[in-house]
Amino acid sequence: MIGRVGGPYRPVVSSPHIKSAAVAATLSALDEGRTPERPVFREAVRTLLAALVERAPGRSVEVRVPPYGAVQCVAGPRHTRGTPPNVIEMDPSTWVALAVGRVDWVAAVTEGRVRVSGARADLAPYLPL
Image (cartoon, rainbow, N blue to C red; front, side, top):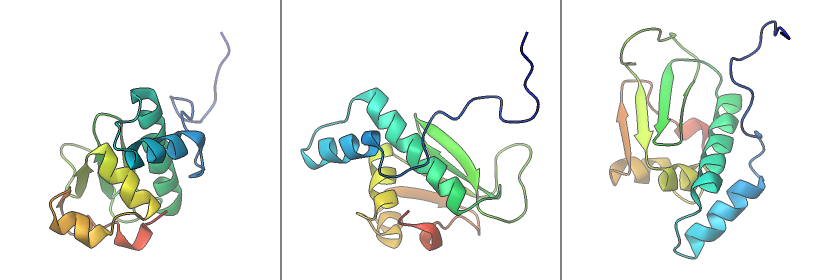
């Protein structure tokens, strides 16, 4: 058995680079009014979530983009058990649009495309990526 010391349980599944092929393919499909292929959409969402974690390291806010991913980010008090007090949830299309700057944070929240709870549940300072 080859041992692993330190590091995450799961290997990195996405490149943190926003200009990835998956993000480009997802944007192209969305621009054409199509739903991106599931594996490509998943990779784009995870790539952009990884970029968010790099930009806003921490564990005080949980960002959920079902069914493709969830991350904890933003500096502040760390959440450890139960339902986090600061949660942001949205669909994959909204996340991609927010991350690349096609949708404004305030507009997305106001329109109900993003659900937020908690005093720290604000990604406006970190978007677009």
